[in-house]
Every structure is written in C-alpha cells, then in structure tokens.
Image 1 (cartoon, one colour):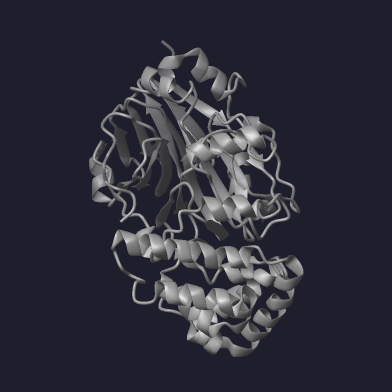
Image 2 (tube, one colour):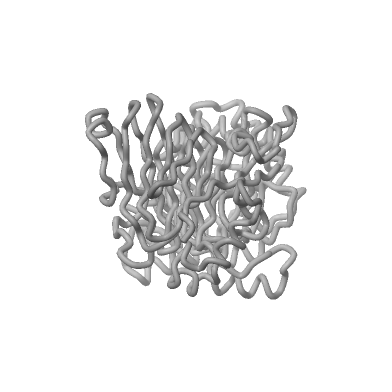
Length: 451
C-alpha cells in the first residue's frame, strides 16, 4: 500500500477582514508551497487558509493535484472505516489558519438539527447541514468577543452606559434587572432557566432595533468613550477596565461605524489570548473575533448565522432564537491544555525542553497537538492512531517521516497523515513548531477541553 504521507496544496480565502499582503500568515503559509503557483498581492486581504476536504476549498495533493477528498474516498483506509462511515467518507474536521485585521461578524454556528433545517430552507446562505463547534489557538496575541458575560456585569453596564440603556428601553432594562436580582450566580436549574430567558429578552431588545436608532445611539456611545477614558462604563466591570472598553468602542466604530456590535460588546466577554492560549466554542455560542493570527479547528462546516459587524447576509431572528444564552466568565471557555501522552521525545528534544501539548475539546470530531522541538536533531515520534491527521508547520524547519518516506518541512507546509501510521517529526532548526489536528473515535483523550 502507498505510504500514507501526502503533502498538501491548500487554498486561501480573500475576505475583507483579513490581513493585507505579506502581513497575513494565512497568505504566507499558502505561498510557501512552491507548486501552488499562488503569489501574494501586496494590497489584497487574505483571511483564511483551509486544510481539509470541505468542498468549498478542498486541499490537493502537491504531486498529483488530486483533491484530498478524492483520495480519501478512493482509499477508505486513509481515514479508517469507522470514521469514513460516520462522517460520509470525508475528514470530520476543517483545519484553518486565520489572519484577522478587523472584526469578523457577530455570529454563531448552528447545532446539527438546526443546521439541517437551515440548509433545507436556505441553501444559499447555509451551504451544508453540519454543526460547527470550533476551537481557537492563538499564534499571535488575539482578542475577541466570546460568550455572554456574567449577568452582574451586564447589569453593571445597563446601569453605567446611558446610551445602551436608552437603546434597549427603560422598561426592558428594568425587567432584566428585576428578573435576575439575587439569582445572578444561582446554580439552581429553575433560576438558571429564568435568567437565560431574561437575557434572551434583553439581548433581543437590542438586536431588533432599527439601524437608524442604533446609529444615533452609537454616536452618543462613541462620544462618551472618547471623553470619559478610565471612567467610561462606570470604570468598567470586573473583567475589563473602563479605558480598555472605551478604546475598544472607538476602534470598532472606526471599522463599522454606528453598528449594533458596538453595544453587543457590553453583553459579551471581551477576551485576550496570549500565544498558545486557546478557547472552545460549542455550537450555538455567540462570538466575534477581532484581531490576531490563530489556528482554528472545527467540525467540517461553513455555516454561519450573522448579526452585526458585517455587510453580509444577517439573520437576526435565527440568531436570537438559537443561542444557548449560557453566561459565564471567559475563564470557563479558555482551555486547559495538557501534555500529549502518545509521543516520545528523543534525548535532544527532552534536554531542550521541547514539548507536545494536547488541546482536547469535549467533542469527538477533532483534537489538536502543538509540538515545539527546540534545537537541531530534536525528534518527536507519534504513536499510530486509528484516525487521520493534518499537520501544518508554523515556524522553523525540519522533516516528517512515515516509515521509509521522509519529506522536508518548512513554515507553511501542510501534510496529511493517514490512519494507523506512526509519524516522526525532526527539527533541523533552533525552533520547529507544528500543529496537528486529528480525529480518533476510540481512545480519545478525556482531558476535557473547557475548564
């Protein structure tokens, strides 16, 4: 049988929010593969590098130019019989590099049942029937809006941001405050459901305002942010200082003037990730990525329900009805990576503090291992697993081997590794960094991706 190591040629999407020209890691990685004939245009934004079998932008074998989708469907052993049968003879995950210059849309991804309904009703805007839980790992410093804030923080902003309170209306604000009073952190199921209903009502009151009303309120909000500095929004909440929020409002207004997203940020956690930090978003979790370069892994879907910070199709009724309205500090969405147990480091790797770290979300479609090999000759041998992997190098250089087959690896190179293949990575530089997305239905680590 052919040795299951395939170098991939991967496509890059040019969305308006992407970093421009050579500033984009997604573009630089796409251009690294010499056979791709892709050249970076200095004034063009490049947003996402896609690695996988999704039909919107399938990866190709560098040598044969056949799509990875064709290859795994022709040779079912590449992804394993069990995974092929369960996920329709294609990779269960989509692996990406995102290079974010300006805010992505305020969005959520539907659960499986809703995705099937939306795809049947509106295939133009919902191109497939799959759910899309996703994980984000920061490659450079990242910031974004992710999940609803603790209820006390939302109440604080309703009390200290007059333009927000006026926009949703005094009655709606009071109803929310009274509904959650004394129950903000209750773990009682009845209280939690009542709180979620109150949050949905208060959030919907904002999202259903007409654009001219929102734009007028936004002028007042931005003026306050520019004038109040540290004192903005009552000096901020427990999670964010007033000046930080003021700067964020001004920055986002510069990108999407008068947008409802300027007010949504008071409902959502504003999170910053340092390099190597990660978070997991379940289906139906609301979020908006704002800036940075990230590795992203998700179930293989391109479904997005949007409602702000975008000129694209927005579906506010679907968004406001589909969200879970779970509320929690951002610490509960950040992941706790652990040492990956199924790898052996050689003496050089071990003595240079090389590492293989596992990011393991609480779903079966994917996990990701980040490997850092420090020093020439540092080597990591990954045990065979019963599923497929996709590996990208983000820094340094080295080699990848399966049996007698060895390939050179540079930053931006991407490889597919078939099921049941032992894989060896070896550095020939001072620092060699790779990310490996994989799926294994049996024996999946239970490191619980969310703390």
